[in-house]
Length: 140
Image 1 (tube, one colour):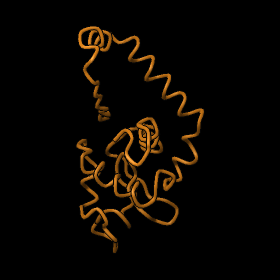
Image 2: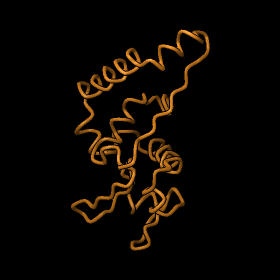
Image 3: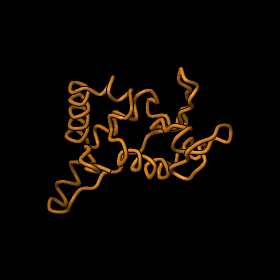
């Protein structure tokens, strides 16, 4: 997803941290009684069918599908949200993912890769091959 609609992956990682803290099973209800599901906090009134409310179900899926460790369906729906609203659609992103926070994500990623034996060996052994990284969030 890095670069999708001009959005850097660090912004998506930050989005997944608030308020879900990287938890794919995160469920919350806001002050308007709107349920939010999964790692990207997708609205049960707009993006999925929760079986309890009338929904727009723009992603044509059950909200329960956003509460498991397989985030492929979450990402497909996230792409629809980002296409329609952009990343500032999430209040949590606007409130928490400021420039300083995003710099910390840069530093953490840079430190991890520069000091990781696996990465050093990969760069040394195959310097011309493009590097693809898949981020997996551990289940809790």
